[in-house]
Length: 259
Image (cartoon, rainbow, N blue to C red; front, side, top):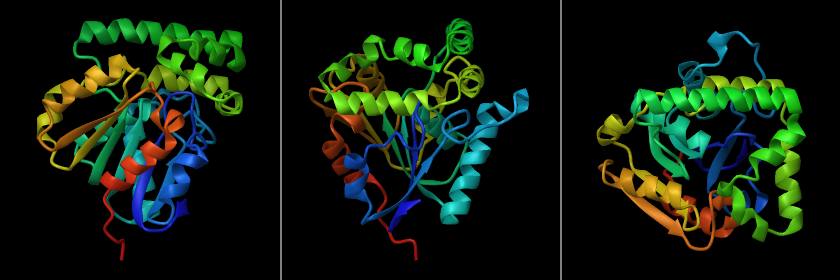
């Protein structure tokens, strides 16, 4: 845990870890927030057996609640990016206590069972690819998606740092995470968005049209929500525009004192 002040939990995306948040994004927050950068299951140092009971959305949320209690002893602001945002949103809809929910480039899941079945099959094929080809080959394949095309404009050092952090993950654990926690496995929460009571803040990059449209749709479903679009960046706002991302967090996260 880093910093001091109001409690803040950060949940990274797929192939990331608790080390994925750039110093340029975190440093402006540390005077006002106590920040817990979590390693989600199968990422970073968060390793588990291949027992299928360990790799469920419900079990993952139980672990995150335990982290919140251990770090802060009560509700905190949750900030989730991409996969982390999907998990945080699921946690909010099943009643996990939160002060504020911040979502970066996140989705409430796929709407229909048919869509989820297709995605589970795709995720299974990707998981096989991770184990078969190794972590470096998979990361190179994963980051060639159009979703990450905007990374080409990043400085070379930033791109190298992103890649080195991704390939530090264990391929077998990453494959288990994709099978157990992927978009095709997670139930849709579209029909639960209107029940959210805590403040919800969304941020997307203007170049990420897919997730910007998802965020626009969610703004029509969540009672207490706002959506910030950062111009000229893509899916990873915290990497591509760290100063704007940090200012957004500082403005919207719950800043009440712990004591």
